[in-house]
Length: 282
Image 1: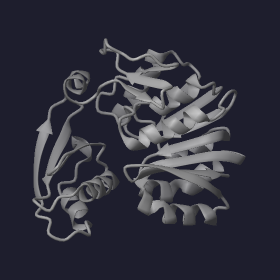
Image 2: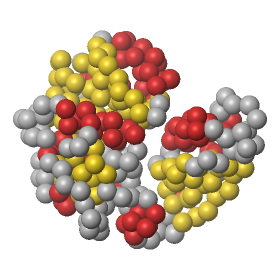
Image 3: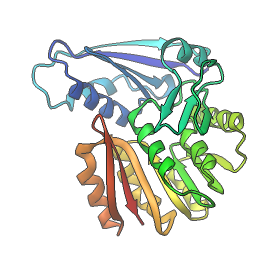
Image 4: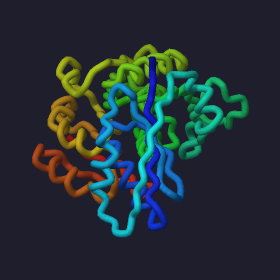
């Protein structure tokens, strides 16, 4: 059963958006997948099978803010119709850069855009609403992908892989480590009718079995990107493109340092609410 743990963290009267955002980043490093921030703190979701009860306190312990009064509670959420949950509470159609509309199969009032992407998210990450997904989507909309090969690391719902295929990529390999998210990506690829997308269950070790790509995108988190960057670099053609996201503007120096060690060339970054996407050349 696809059960989840919902962890509620209230940060007290001293809560700030910066504290909440940083807490989400630390929880993401602990394996949490989805977040609902608010004025008092956040709700964070993780697969029950992956949950470590000590993880919330480890994340809180890293917060460099004075005056916080964190309180933690948890709730098990039994596997259910996640599409209905998203429709009722979270997922609404979104238009990115005026060019791509992202919606679910259960939406009826959908804006029009050149690229129409259907995503039934269940509990996999990536509906376009989070800044990191939107940042990379905007880059893909501005790139010439016709006939290019693309690797999407940590594909989640498959949204970035689907958009790359719609933009003309001839081959897209979408890699996902979490089995339920992998199944969700398969469903979403089928919904959008893009057989050129190869969804793979695995981690960065799966890259060794693939042909080198023209573009690799990785929307995961800082620690995983740092640990796997050498494998990402090896999976891209010389002079190819790499776009990383899933971390904050404050993390850029360590990302650039590791990339420089591998001979990668920094191009630029884009930012939204302190989340960033960083662009390199192999």
